[in-house]
Length: 239
Image (tube, rainbow, N blue to C red; front, side):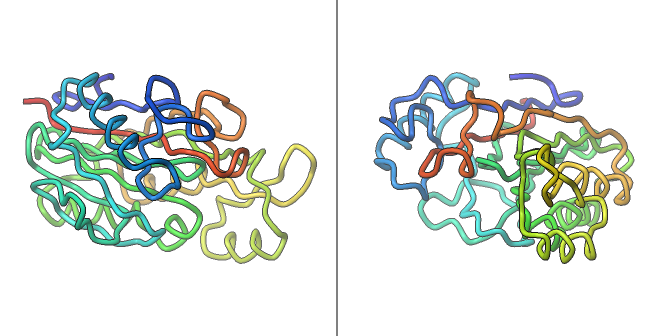
């Protein structure tokens, strides 16, 4: 747990410290996996407690690789809608974005008292989920120039191999994602693409958790280990 900016806390989990059995061992926070859902709930409870949060004050999304954003004032529980970004002005309400190669992206404007979280995979990045989140917060009174963003762990451009046609189609939408693997094959660099989107949106400070999920065995990676679990990035306004 660290400070993202004044009055805003964040944390990025790893795969250790939970109760899930292999291949989800052990801190799987993803409810849409084949893991025992009671184990997932226990992992979420243990993690919230570790961060000084109440488990019933964490907002989980039903992530579907969309560009949909919503304001939240309380968790949805089992009835979460399908969307990939949320923001709030509620102190102590934590927002969680799951990942296992896709990027969790956190945003905060401490002056406006707003925080946001997005799940930005290939489809969400190309359709603009992160710019949509910045715009939604700005429409409610946040200023991008005051915002701090954290781009979390994800599959890096040296590892995220894709077919050549997919790289060309993606780069036609967002040129910064064009990349090449260490082996010289076509790849996508979503970190470069998301960082460029944040810069174009006028976000004042962009921080990076540069870990690659495929390379780092402490993180879940769908490409490396499927089936596997999900880690999460949390952000909340301190009381």
